[in-house]
Length: 396
Image (cartoon, rainbow, N blue to C red):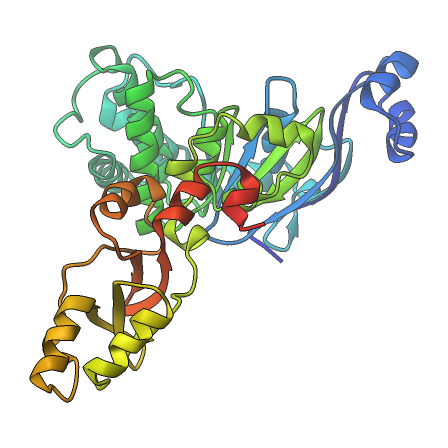
């Protein structure tokens, strides 16, 4: 079982939600059910699992049900039907005290509005969740100060919220969630009220923090670019239903339906797709123990001017045809003296936007390298194709 498991959850608003459930379970459209019963279905038979340490994004337009869904994870809303588990615990069984303890210790929440106390200092705002937990004053101030340092607000502890910019106030909200050291963070459109540049900075900071802390995060957004940039997995919602739940790369390559396909048309693929998503196996590689004449035949056979040299999976470098020809004329027994390190390289998680410049500079495909191993290459033509249609990106 995952850190969070949602199983066949419904949320129907109205005085008689049971009237709508049978119709919804029979597959009727929620608009038709509303016309028939007067009961509005915000979440319709949703199931998903979030693994520990994953950043799971729920993306949808206004009215899609995403915020209602996230509020059922900590029982700010009770499901009309279905079950939500935190670990192996069915949270619908918790009494009021146990539920308060869950919200105070296991799950923290960051809202779209900054929700800071105007009469409290930055430090005391960041420490508020620990105060709810009844952590003693010295410890909570120490942990709050550490959290503020994580979000780049060291030195601002004694300021008041009105003295901060919008981006800084949202950093305080993030620090408050981090200070509790809760295993799960729920983030409901936390950056949507920020200016675009500040928003991108906050996204980058969340990525860095997540790499370090490995919290389990459920992140709500209406912005697909944000969803694709942040999510390990992305669930796309429409009319209360999850229409696709997949990795960002899979959604870009193979949208589940026309609705998702329309969404991804405007996505900046160059910032979402990574080298590992588009790389291919190299057409050929050489061993440093090859002779120059053998190496030249390999280049001729594969119609290449340059190839990579690999020794027991470790990338040694690359060799060019002209240096190999000179080595052959000298009678060199191996190509070791021809190997150079002037070639383009990238890590598997490098966005393909960062591959455009080296791909334009070099004739040889970009080497994708992980722990000194050549795991793939990205040829220029493939890179350009990845920025085109989903079919071209997937190699279809």
